Image 1 (spheres, rainbow, N blue to C red):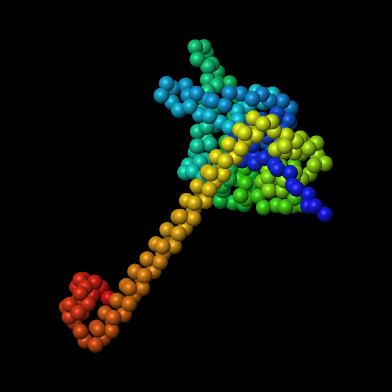
Image 2 (image 1 turned 60 degrees about the horizontal axis):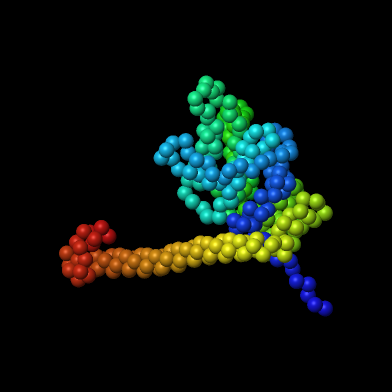
Length: 290
């Protein structure tokens, strides 16, 4: 019997795959509702300009993967980050703060009435040193552990920490992460009895792409794979350099230990420090230190 070929599914972590999936309002709202505490379920959103321009003339422009406004007026920033970097959490705070400060009004009396900004940071690396796939960042009173302000709220989804099988998923958030991590490899979507995952399957099935969409996706996928290969090469090169340095350090330590034994033996035989230094062509202070 001919083996059934698996369906070619989008890679959700390249730019075009990510935009196709989360550029769908129904899918994005369902994904957000699986973990975001927005006070009430998200029932509508609009996609805003991804570019947030600094209010200062010399300030930097920030471009997000997705920038949305919820039906209650709150803003949502969504970023996919494939490469670890220094000060990543600080960077997230900066981005959220910029989205807060951009709400300031000029030319009139303004009473600092601001809408909340929620940041969703999906990473291909570990951000925090724990086992939680989903970590939160918010402003709290450390004495009462109660929220001091709900105007800034960050969620970090750390994909490498997710190890569950399809049978191990305990909630809708788990189901989402399982599918995102595995659908390209599986050529399928699990939990298809749920309407939202039928929709995800239809949007992620590469056979559903137009010719132009397919071309854009393949260019994006190639850029993503080249990028991943570069990261893997750098990691392997770093490990090899580390092993080489370790071997050299080991040799040096071995020579030092051997020299220590020789000096100790000569001293026991009555040789003076000056004689040993002359015999072994060493500095006198090195001999005296043994």
